[in-house]
Length: 213
Image (spheres, rainbow, N blue to C red):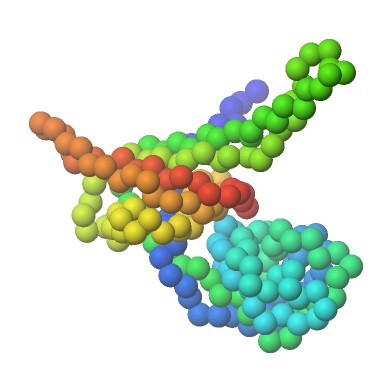
């Protein structure tokens, strides 16, 4: 059997640095997932959109949320919210996209290395230790870079480290799989040596879920 390995070459990593213009939602299909219609939206899987202005008795299930785009087509995309049986209409609904800046010169990356916590459920009737799994800690995402003090993406990482403000990030693999997550830039260090390119190491502490699209 031939290998189904995926090359890492061509992977891209971006940091959220702003928002684009709001786009009008013209239709919604309730269910799981929820399908939103926006003509020629131009979104990509893994993008994060803030939803507002939907109407109906259950519109609060979506309004105000920052949701990750999945299963996009030219005019529709899905979000992981279960609206089965709910009453939600497009109304004056909008989706406002977050904009991203690519980080250049990435040499290696690793991450999503966390684990779920263990909850001890052992009691006096137990014949051996018993456990259940608790919340998942998604760990951190780390990169090694060739340093570039003029690259907008690297400058954004440094600014987020200095500010301590949570940001959104997006990893896109060559097979188009996309991981979106929020986190804090804990470290952007620099190192160099004789006959070497200047390097940077970046550590991002993931906060919350990692969404694959």
